[in-house]
Image 1 (cartoon, rainbow, N blue to C red):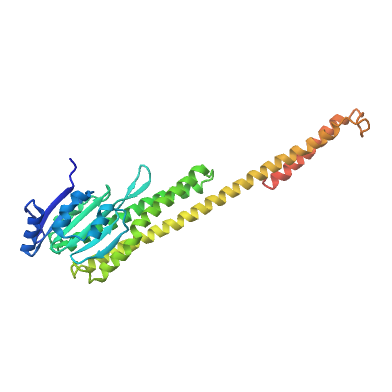
Image 2: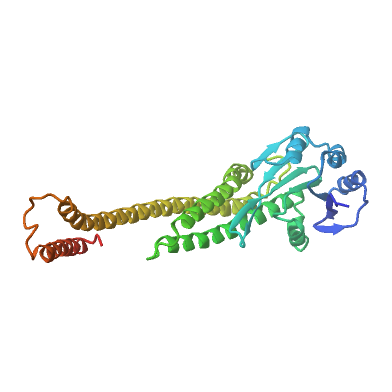
Length: 330
């Protein structure tokens, strides 16, 4: 049976404590304690499975709809009883050089955090372990979870950007290699790389707005002293976005260079074809004239006509070959 609630725990004074299995009782216990909060993690819940969580935490129906449907842009929305954030973690698959994105939603409210994950990217188990190993950070309550999750996702953006940079360097080496590589395969690889960068930008670009709001402060349900932490995340995001923009521009330049090289190669091929056609035209013309079988033609009955004609045709062809060779057409 699929497990929807991946993990659920109460954190008091920065440390994990045992609590009741019922979400309502656990939330009441966290609120009664005052310095505690409940963190519930879910993975791809259905509407029926999420109904209980919605009612217990009084989540806004519009935010719940977004959390269930997924396919959302990164955003930050404030409702009466909670804060709703959407993040898009990305994963780089080295076997296929492919970038894929998932979705992660966070509901932050009075003494609770609910995380809803779609896709296999960015599992939160490691984030939870890191937070549990840092009680001082966890003392900041639900804000610590929002910070740690966004920090882990943005840091992974930088790792993926580094992998894409390696792929781009390989593409550049292939395009500017003396042999030129396989033109069809190279163009396909450049197009695929552009698609991966686009997928990356869809995840990281829109996140700048929500992080700017968190950095500025005055966001409900977010600790007033959390600005320096989110400022650090925002700095990493800006660096990641700059890298992605640079990758996109470089890919466009590589594509232009590849198309220019293909045009040059096509011109070279056309020059070679034209040169060979010109050399073939001379003996063809002479042979065609003397093959018309007219009775009265110059030197038609002269004994030396045949070797002279052959010598003249060969000489002209040789002169054309030297000319085209000197001009780089051969």
